[in-house]
Length: 116
Image (cartoon, rainbow, N blue to C red; front, side):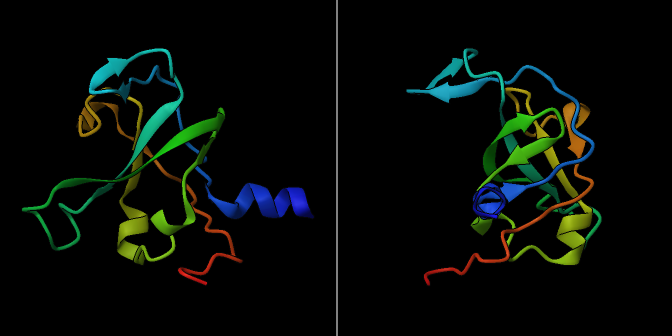
């Protein structure tokens, strides 16, 4: 049970992620040694904020071919509309719409509590 709790401590489960090489930023330079680092993106275009468009919410790490791990505070307060328009991207250009991968399911640690 502790292992499951730990896994969901900072997790967002993505069930439709295709593995694509990622480019992290280290000291302001592209870093291609960290191939599993990606960005969590919300597309606000169709949910009433067309001027916002694609918005990078958080970063995370691909820990399995279909599981992207990020902090619970990144997913805890997302609305149903935001969850329905949630993506990840492993492209160095995180906001490149051609390389977005749709999130099938997002899970926030049920024990997460902001500031508690």
